[in-house]
Amino acid sequence: MTKNYNTEDLNNRLAEREWMIQTQLVSRDITDEAVIKSMLIVPRHKYVMEDKQAYAYYDTALDIEAGQTISQPYIVALMAQALELKSSDKVMEIGTGSGYSAAILSRMAEYIYTIERLDVLAQIAKRRFQDQGYENIEVYVGDGTLGWAEKAPFDAILVTAGGPLIPDSLIHQLAVGGRLVIPVGDKGVQKLMRVKKTATSELSEENLGTVRFVPLIGTKGWRESIMLEGL
Ligand code: SAM
Image (cartoon, rainbow, N blue to C red):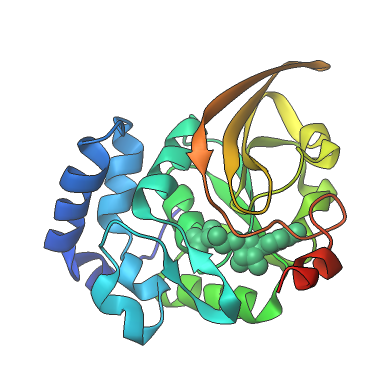
């Protein structure tokens, strides 16, 4: 596919991304060259609100619109690495948020289908993809816990919000040989789980460590009413 990226954005704040990669990714356990290259290229400061742009390359998650968050760069890299992507892979992401992780994945795989439940975030992310020339990302507004059956099977599925369990719908939509990465646990803390579909009805599961994500809200996630009770 011919890609028409906005090269002005790519060169902007490149030195800060180099610093982010050395001090936050390579110094930890990120070794996947495709992840490192993608994180060097994608301008994270373009995925946050103006008043947060100064902090875009810090070692931290940041607030975005609609009370949601863009994950810490290291966590984005860790999840992208855990997906073990090939350039021919078809990927589904649940939780578009700012659009940053979809942009990272889109430079490592063939096509990204990303689902966001909040329309306001989906529209902002779509505009960013257009502005920066990403032509291999499709955004859908809906309940990602049900997946995207018409586009399945997927070689890899990334969930960027924390759910109480692994939705069976996502397992069904994973190709044989596919990888699903998802935070699973309670509303405060989760285990980052990687599930591999080794055969049609055979799965292997690994715990990649402790993470903290905003809740996955939907039919096969947390109920929205339960989230409001906690306020
Ligand atoms: N990947 C995002 C990024 O790069 O900015 C981070 C996303 S944020 C941590 C989690 C997102 O998941 C929020 O935008 C939230 O609205 C969304 N979300 C929660 N439950 C969802 C669901 N069932 N379907 C789709 N999106 C959902």
